[in-house]
Length: 211
Image 1: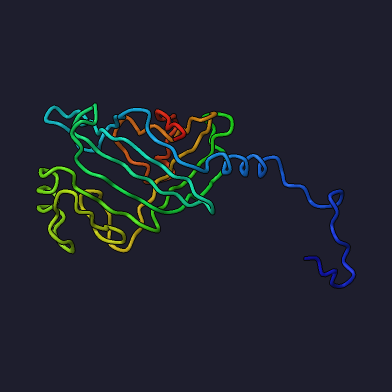
Image 2: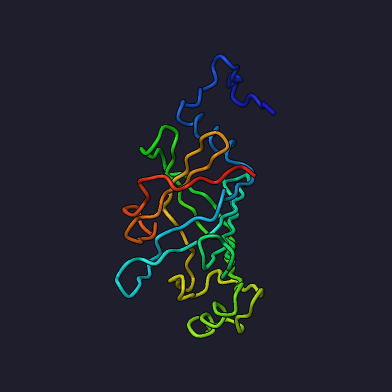
Protein backbone atom coordinates (compact mmCIF):
# COMPACT_ATOMS: atom_id res chain seq x y z
CA UNK A 1 0.00 0.00 0.00
CA UNK A 2 1.42 3.40 -1.01
CA UNK A 3 0.85 6.35 1.34
CA UNK A 4 2.43 9.29 -0.52
CA UNK A 5 3.69 11.03 2.66
CA UNK A 6 5.24 14.49 2.11
CA UNK A 7 4.11 14.49 -1.48
CA UNK A 8 6.67 11.84 -2.32
CA UNK A 9 6.26 10.52 -5.85
CA UNK A 10 5.22 6.85 -6.09
CA UNK A 11 7.87 4.88 -7.93
CA UNK A 12 6.80 3.55 -11.31
CA UNK A 13 8.70 0.81 -13.13
CA UNK A 14 10.57 3.53 -15.01
CA UNK A 15 11.91 5.29 -11.91
CA UNK A 16 12.32 2.43 -9.42
CA UNK A 17 15.92 1.66 -8.48
CA UNK A 18 17.02 -1.47 -10.29
CA UNK A 19 18.73 -4.36 -8.53
CA UNK A 20 22.26 -4.96 -9.68
CA UNK A 21 22.94 -7.94 -11.90
CA UNK A 22 24.80 -9.58 -9.03
CA UNK A 23 21.80 -9.26 -6.70
CA UNK A 24 19.52 -10.65 -9.39
CA UNK A 25 21.86 -13.59 -10.02
CA UNK A 26 22.01 -14.42 -6.31
CA UNK A 27 18.23 -14.27 -6.03
CA UNK A 28 17.95 -16.68 -8.97
CA UNK A 29 20.48 -19.04 -7.40
CA UNK A 30 18.61 -19.08 -4.09
CA UNK A 31 15.32 -19.76 -5.89
CA UNK A 32 16.83 -22.59 -7.96
CA UNK A 33 18.36 -24.11 -4.82
CA UNK A 34 15.00 -24.58 -3.07
CA UNK A 35 13.89 -28.19 -2.76
CA UNK A 36 15.31 -31.61 -1.96
CA UNK A 37 18.71 -32.98 -3.00
CA UNK A 38 20.46 -36.29 -2.38
CA UNK A 39 23.71 -38.16 -3.04
CA UNK A 40 23.96 -39.99 -6.33
CA UNK A 41 25.86 -42.81 -4.58
CA UNK A 42 27.88 -43.32 -1.40
CA UNK A 43 30.72 -40.79 -1.24
CA UNK A 44 34.17 -40.79 0.33
CA UNK A 45 35.99 -38.03 2.22
CA UNK A 46 39.42 -37.82 3.85
CA UNK A 47 38.81 -37.81 7.59
CA UNK A 48 40.88 -36.01 10.19
CA UNK A 49 42.00 -39.30 11.78
CA UNK A 50 45.01 -41.26 10.57
CA UNK A 51 45.88 -44.93 10.26
CA UNK A 52 49.01 -46.61 11.68
CA UNK A 53 50.95 -45.69 8.53
CA UNK A 54 50.04 -42.01 8.86
CA UNK A 55 47.59 -41.98 5.96
CA UNK A 56 44.18 -40.34 6.41
CA UNK A 57 41.33 -42.73 7.07
CA UNK A 58 38.39 -42.63 4.63
CA UNK A 59 34.99 -41.35 5.72
CA UNK A 60 32.04 -42.84 3.78
CA UNK A 61 28.65 -41.13 3.71
CA UNK A 62 25.44 -40.33 1.89
CA UNK A 63 23.76 -36.91 2.06
CA UNK A 64 20.18 -35.67 1.89
CA UNK A 65 19.81 -31.89 1.78
CA UNK A 66 16.72 -29.69 1.89
CA UNK A 67 16.92 -26.00 0.98
CA UNK A 68 14.07 -24.01 2.53
CA UNK A 69 12.82 -20.41 2.27
CA UNK A 70 14.52 -17.67 4.30
CA UNK A 71 17.94 -19.27 3.75
CA UNK A 72 17.12 -22.21 6.03
CA UNK A 73 18.38 -25.73 5.42
CA UNK A 74 18.13 -29.27 6.74
CA UNK A 75 20.91 -31.80 6.18
CA UNK A 76 21.00 -35.52 6.92
CA UNK A 77 24.21 -37.53 6.67
CA UNK A 78 24.45 -41.31 7.03
CA UNK A 79 27.99 -42.42 7.77
CA UNK A 80 28.95 -46.00 6.89
CA UNK A 81 31.88 -48.33 7.55
CA UNK A 82 32.21 -49.39 3.91
CA UNK A 83 32.34 -47.67 0.50
CA UNK A 84 29.00 -49.16 -0.60
CA UNK A 85 26.93 -47.94 2.36
CA UNK A 86 26.02 -51.49 3.38
CA UNK A 87 27.12 -51.05 7.01
CA UNK A 88 25.67 -47.78 8.35
CA UNK A 89 27.30 -46.46 11.51
CA UNK A 90 25.50 -43.22 12.36
CA UNK A 91 22.90 -40.74 11.20
CA UNK A 92 23.55 -37.02 11.68
CA UNK A 93 20.82 -34.39 11.25
CA UNK A 94 21.56 -30.67 11.14
CA UNK A 95 19.22 -27.70 10.80
CA UNK A 96 20.17 -24.08 10.41
CA UNK A 97 20.84 -21.18 8.08
CA UNK A 98 22.94 -20.39 5.02
CA UNK A 99 24.93 -17.15 5.07
CA UNK A 100 25.80 -15.96 1.57
CA UNK A 101 29.25 -14.35 1.47
CA UNK A 102 29.82 -13.44 -2.17
CA UNK A 103 31.17 -14.87 -5.38
CA UNK A 104 33.50 -17.88 -5.33
CA UNK A 105 36.03 -17.98 -8.20
CA UNK A 106 35.86 -21.75 -8.83
CA UNK A 107 33.14 -21.44 -11.52
CA UNK A 108 30.80 -18.79 -12.95
CA UNK A 109 27.81 -18.54 -10.60
CA UNK A 110 29.54 -20.24 -7.65
CA UNK A 111 28.97 -18.61 -4.27
CA UNK A 112 30.76 -18.64 -0.92
CA UNK A 113 28.25 -19.92 1.65
CA UNK A 114 28.59 -20.45 5.39
CA UNK A 115 26.37 -23.22 6.79
CA UNK A 116 25.46 -22.58 10.43
CA UNK A 117 23.72 -25.25 12.54
CA UNK A 118 21.83 -22.72 14.65
CA UNK A 119 18.53 -24.65 14.89
CA UNK A 120 19.26 -28.33 15.54
CA UNK A 121 21.97 -30.99 15.60
CA UNK A 122 21.31 -34.62 16.50
CA UNK A 123 23.15 -37.93 16.28
CA UNK A 124 21.74 -41.45 16.02
CA UNK A 125 24.01 -44.52 16.36
CA UNK A 126 23.11 -47.16 13.78
CA UNK A 127 25.61 -49.80 14.91
CA UNK A 128 26.37 -51.15 18.37
CA UNK A 129 30.09 -50.56 17.92
CA UNK A 130 29.55 -46.85 17.34
CA UNK A 131 27.19 -46.59 20.31
CA UNK A 132 29.87 -48.25 22.46
CA UNK A 133 32.45 -45.70 21.33
CA UNK A 134 30.12 -42.80 22.15
CA UNK A 135 29.45 -44.25 25.60
CA UNK A 136 33.20 -44.10 26.25
CA UNK A 137 34.05 -40.66 24.86
CA UNK A 138 30.74 -38.73 24.87
CA UNK A 139 28.85 -39.87 27.94
CA UNK A 140 28.89 -36.70 30.05
CA UNK A 141 25.65 -34.77 29.65
CA UNK A 142 23.98 -37.51 27.61
CA UNK A 143 21.78 -40.52 28.23
CA UNK A 144 23.42 -43.87 27.43
CA UNK A 145 23.89 -44.10 23.68
CA UNK A 146 21.90 -46.89 22.03
CA UNK A 147 21.31 -48.09 18.48
CA UNK A 148 18.52 -46.17 16.69
CA UNK A 149 18.09 -43.78 19.65
CA UNK A 150 18.63 -40.13 18.65
CA UNK A 151 20.11 -37.54 20.97
CA UNK A 152 20.46 -33.81 20.47
CA UNK A 153 24.00 -32.47 20.68
CA UNK A 154 22.83 -28.93 19.85
CA UNK A 155 24.67 -26.40 21.97
CA UNK A 156 26.48 -29.13 23.90
CA UNK A 157 30.06 -30.30 24.12
CA UNK A 158 30.59 -33.35 21.88
CA UNK A 159 34.16 -34.56 21.71
CA UNK A 160 33.82 -36.82 18.61
CA UNK A 161 32.97 -33.77 16.48
CA UNK A 162 35.13 -31.33 18.50
CA UNK A 163 32.02 -29.32 19.44
CA UNK A 164 32.25 -26.95 22.39
CA UNK A 165 29.38 -26.14 24.72
CA UNK A 166 27.39 -23.05 23.79
CA UNK A 167 28.68 -22.82 20.22
CA UNK A 168 27.02 -23.56 16.88
CA UNK A 169 28.72 -25.78 14.34
CA UNK A 170 29.60 -23.82 11.18
CA UNK A 171 31.38 -24.58 7.92
CA UNK A 172 32.86 -22.14 5.40
CA UNK A 173 31.77 -23.83 2.19
CA UNK A 174 30.61 -23.04 -1.34
CA UNK A 175 27.55 -23.66 -3.51
CA UNK A 176 27.50 -24.15 -7.26
CA UNK A 177 24.39 -25.10 -9.24
CA UNK A 178 24.50 -26.60 -12.71
CA UNK A 179 21.09 -27.73 -13.88
CA UNK A 180 19.81 -30.39 -11.50
CA UNK A 181 23.24 -30.89 -9.95
CA UNK A 182 24.25 -29.17 -6.69
CA UNK A 183 27.95 -28.96 -5.91
CA UNK A 184 29.50 -28.08 -2.56
CA UNK A 185 33.20 -27.81 -1.85
CA UNK A 186 35.56 -30.79 -2.03
CA UNK A 187 37.16 -31.66 1.30
CA UNK A 188 40.74 -30.53 1.77
CA UNK A 189 43.04 -33.42 0.86
CA UNK A 190 44.96 -33.11 4.13
CA UNK A 191 41.79 -33.62 6.19
CA UNK A 192 41.37 -30.01 7.35
CA UNK A 193 37.78 -29.04 8.02
CA UNK A 194 36.06 -25.96 6.63
CA UNK A 195 36.41 -24.26 10.01
CA UNK A 196 37.97 -20.95 8.91
CA UNK A 197 37.81 -18.65 5.91
CA UNK A 198 41.35 -19.76 5.02
CA UNK A 199 40.14 -23.38 4.90
CA UNK A 200 37.16 -22.65 2.64
CA UNK A 201 37.25 -25.22 -0.22
CA UNK A 202 38.76 -24.33 -3.57
CA UNK A 203 37.41 -27.27 -5.61
CA UNK A 204 34.06 -28.94 -6.25
CA UNK A 205 32.80 -32.05 -4.48
CA UNK A 206 30.83 -34.81 -6.20
CA UNK A 207 27.34 -33.30 -6.68
CA UNK A 208 23.98 -33.94 -5.16
CA UNK A 209 21.11 -34.55 -7.57
CA UNK A 210 17.65 -33.04 -7.32
CA UNK A 211 15.29 -35.48 -5.64
